Image 1 (cartoon, one colour):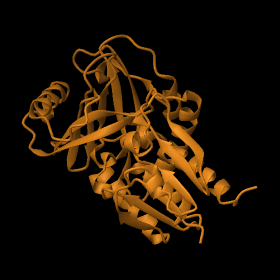
Image 2 (cartoon, rainbow, N blue to C red):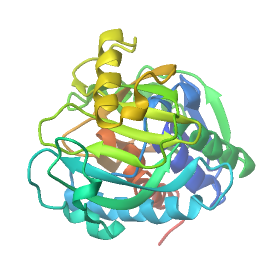
Image 3 (cartoon, rainbow, N blue to C red):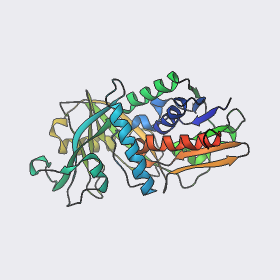
Image 4 (tube, one colour):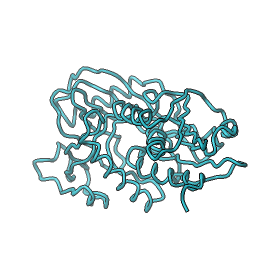
Length: 319
């Protein structure tokens, strides 16, 4: 049997595994954490292209993912909704090039929050990540895939002959798994509160400003956030949480005094360039798919489909 082993159960690993399993490939996902305990589960999260490299491929992967998420928004229980909102800046800015894909339009003066001078309004997929990861896991299992909890210390440990192809989707864990010094963690923290009636998203796009976003998910709102390069601590920082709540309430007064439900912390897998390539390990092919930084959700389906093509070539399933 041409089994494929996907290491990592975050959004990149599960999406890749779903693409393979639904194409009839025998897939097992191996992870030291269940999906609901991964960095992906701690994300906000919204389709929002980040400045990551390689830029031309990221643009293509983002567009593929946007199309898939739009389709998933029609499925009950997927955790994906199309929501309208704004990104705004305290300094004049041109609309980013990617905004044409979502039909963004400049904010009217009445759209701008206090202290902001420009912005753009558009509709985009907003994703409740715990629900979305559960959706992906259900699809994987329904397609015949498997999930096993285990930790590999190195990539050599995973190349044990039980799988013809190993797919490395370990995010920040790739720093130790494949000894990649280019990988670093960017610690992110957010606060989830009861929704006091917010229906549109907001994101501060001021250059150099602290990360500030408001992402409504039905009965709850995800408020962010932090971006701390080189910090691997997963314990919530109460002072950081206080500052997040204060920044978000200053933008959206409805949030003042909102009841806190939980704190989430994750490690974004930063790397100068996303690594998506095949590397031979003896008779086993290792397909790397990691280093997506804060853009994991945004490029997930595009990268997963390309990684799946690498796997199919390694298995001899494509010309």
